[in-house]
Image 1: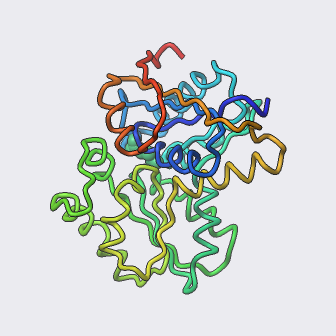
Image 2: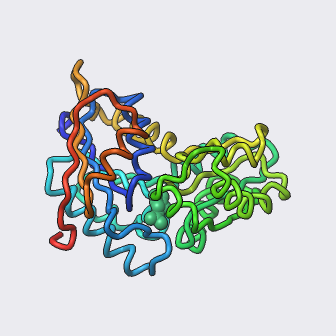
Length: 270
Ligand code: DGL
């Protein structure tokens, strides 16, 4: 079982921020990634739709030999994390890893959370942090335009459209004097530089992709489930819409020096 792959899914490209960190800290692990590019974004959908999509994404990944499934999607982790409770294998979302990291990082107890509309509406990060620590001031802002911008390749830190949208969302948080900001959607680390340039260097940015990968590493290590191999793991990517765009975006973003393939599947069959 330890040599089985790690299954990861997101609505699109965002979960690659977790893959990027896994490649850095656990290069030997095999990864099977599903990006639901045909139905992105999830964050503007109803709870029922998000649950349905998440169940199909998990069913697809379970059709492979996987030892763990990571919902590298803040929206699924916030709205549909309970699905993991009935699975016969470990299931990890991004809310808990980010909440733990934010509570550890804050000095003044003022923490910002940004995410999709569905994520913010669920208050999942707020609830998780309140379990971990008392007397926190938590400020939550939905940033619904970030995912479509990122999926369209508008990610350069100096891009005027990106900066204008980011200012609209973030200036309100900046005024609250937060010292820690959770990027509560896995797409957001892709535009971390732009976000950081607005928030200023004194704000700790919690990178959801990174924290989730570290959490997965600890989880597997503590249970003796790490793959034992000196070779780099194999990566397989699947999407629910055309594979071409994803392949070029993924290779640009991941900067992986390895061969991998991206295939289109029909997610409605799962
Ligand atoms: N990466 C997803 C998340 O973390 C994006 C959700 C969406 O598709 O709106 O929430």
